[in-house]
Image (cartoon, rainbow, N blue to C red; front, top):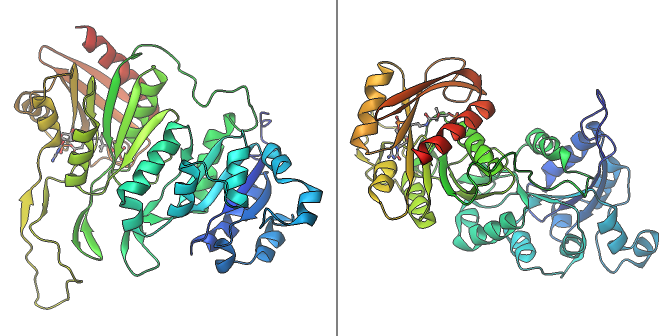
Amino acid sequence: MTATRNAPPLQGKRLLLCIGGGIAAYKALELVRRLREAGAQVQVAMTAGAQQFVTPLSFQALSGLPVRTSLWDSAAEQAMGHIELARWADRVVIAPATADLLARLAHGLADDLVATLCLATTAPLTVAPAMNHRMWLHPATQANLQTLRQRGVQVIGPVDGPLAEGESGPGRLSEPEAIVAALVQAGEDIGDEAAPAFAPSGELLAGQRVLISAGPTYEDLDPVRYLGNRSSGKMGYALAAAAAAQGAQVVLVSGPVSLATPPGVERIDVRSAAQMREAVLAAMPADIYIGAAAVADYTPVKVAAQKIKKSGQSLTLEFVRTPDILAEVAAQTQSLKLVVGFAAETHDIERYARAKLTDKRLDLIIANQVGVADGGFESDQNAATAYWADGERVFPATSKTRLAEQLLELIAQRLQA
Ligand code: PMT
């Protein structure tokens, strides 16, 4: 099923939207509105927990369809049985997806209507998690997510920010517009059972395990503040998508960003430089490492247990150096065939980039200029120059998607060198 030109981007798509039991359920009301504006038919199903936060009637009013709440509702089952409903959907979307729901999906439980629908459907599944940040970072939740991702489940968010409990961290439901945009991006797969979740566009990296870091790191100062940077993760995610499209087995270690995981990529979410180091080292061995993340160079000596209060006219905080993940990876010689770093520079680009190439013992470094409007951090565009011991190549400004494809071609060539 392909949308016609100028039609709303989700025109005619049948979305089964499952609501999990979290405070973010209220945002799903807006999501229904936006999905319908985008042309989708939206059938809502709610867990018992979700109904504690928002009434089925609210969703019925916005979706224009009766809401399904129980496996044991004989009237609803007579109108459309749950197996029929699971078959009806072009895509199943769970927003918010709670830690409990992710765990039940990962383990294949069918203990309520929503879990049963997810087990009974052959439609692609998208989850937009939302929960307390400690629950999100818990190894059990991350392991469940990894299982789901390995099954090809699309994961959108969560994003970093203030949470309902007065704390802050990764766990906020992605904004409805971001969820719709990610669904539109995945739109080629919606409703087309024949379409693979991911279509390799080449075999340049077939059989290679590629480990990529992306996004910023956040170093917490106290329960409400952190030291971060402007990396959006776009460059690293584009590289992960391009590597997967070239047949690689891709592991993406990501700082806090609000981007959808590229198809076929295993993603591990982290927050701080220390967590990123731990996740990268745990994901080894790999054939290729690409360090596209903007890792904090310094972290506070201690994280204040309580909010730092205003007192004097100035505030001095003490920081210590973070370990250099890239240099540490490059020092591990067992399996690595190629170690690629990035250099984000504002001036003297070649000098600084070549110094990093030598000091960190890299095979290749991709230098890009930061602090400019159309490139570097946040932008959808970028330009770069790749340096290696006895060569260099200039990549003029283009989209990060295209640049990533070109860089992966160079990486495949350097692998043979
Ligand atoms: O995410 P986007 O908004 O798309 O922006 C993309 C980008 C500008 C972040 C990306 O293209 C980029 O340049 N990434 C590297 C940013 C950076 O931290 O550069 P650096 O010159 O400070 O670090 C050099 C290299 O060492 C990088 O590969 C970095 O990942 C790595 N590093 C740095 C410090 C540290 N403690 N550990 C590291 O591994």
